[in-house]
Image (cartoon, rainbow, N blue to C red; front, side, top):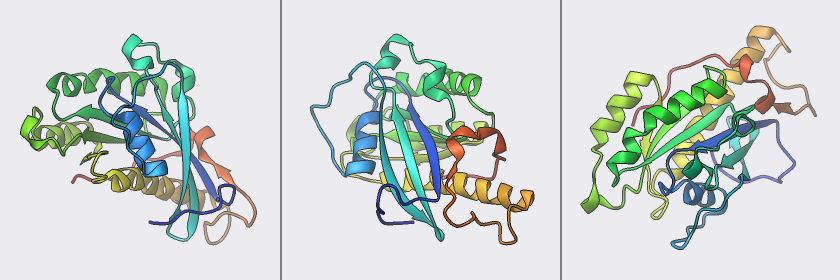
Length: 216
């Protein structure tokens, strides 16, 4: 899975949301993935922000529309509109702050209350570069992810470690679920999208079926 494409040249559009406590690095994960940038001085802003990036999955072009809570999480004011239509989520905690990991359960419950139960979720332990401040061992993250049937990865937005892989894994899982559904529905003999037709799965979460996910 690699490469950028012209912004409007895509076969699928998937909405992915970033959730988790304030200060865990969601905005920098977003900017690292979509712009390959990291801002040490980044500050939370109130509202909803999103960015896009287009990638190739198998032989199809997938456009990811990734939404960031942008400070709302500090006030627990995230609305159902933020979650609406999401087919993927990165649930982020800070590996140096145990409390952010303990709050993952609340975030997951909120996500399940506002989205289709088959949404693809990646649990992300961010700031893995700060090894000397580690407060959440990798095994704790893995264990929780296995218990809840989530994907799992540790990332560093600062060092760009596993950021690409985390987003790519979520998008690949969504794509495979979607294409499997198309084959089952017999949309065409090859299960592919008719030429010139764009599939906006962000508005069709109910079509998803859960598949096995990663655990790194």
